[in-house]
Image (tube, rainbow, N blue to C red; front, side, top):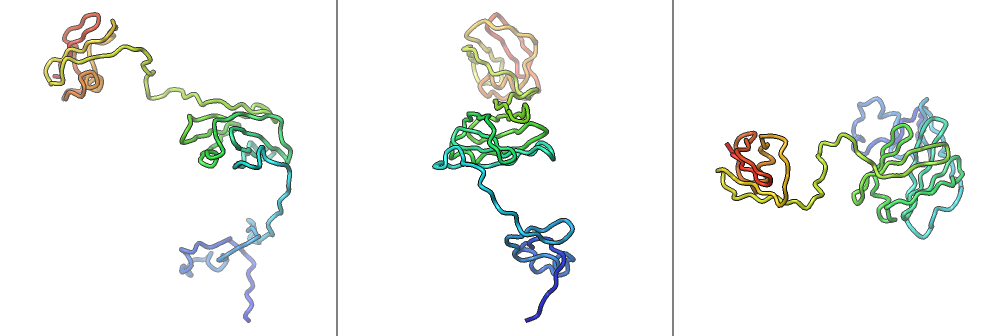
Length: 220
């Protein structure tokens, strides 16, 4: 049986690249590398073993482990379990435990990214959260508050606005309570909303007349 001497290992070669024999890395790659890991100098090293350091919050439920590296000297293991978040460092469980909105069936759908000492967490079922490292052994977990959003504040009042029609002629817009108008021009998007999807061709619509609760908007 012929013997092959290979002193450089680039790791596993994609099955889609098996026919690319003209590439220089083809000769130094492997179809399968099991229980070994390639090193930067080119050699391969046997994979490290595992060590039991402790039990998760509840072994009867699903648990996700996620790494968080703050610096070359400080890294953590985040343990997401059913409605709980725990922290491990250097094989030791920290005393800080956070309550989260994520059930055991949601922890594997989380998406995370980090910058400096902050981990941003997104979930398809919950609002985004921010995990902040406040010291070597403590964290803060809170809902993410966005700044400089491209949206105006949500209208939480009970005021309603009713248009007099949906034609492209003059439309009276009447509010259920008194309101103030700070501009003499209504944008076309706002006018469309006021006029129940009336077609307005101009970018803005002047207010032709107004009282304490009624505006007359011209679509021209």
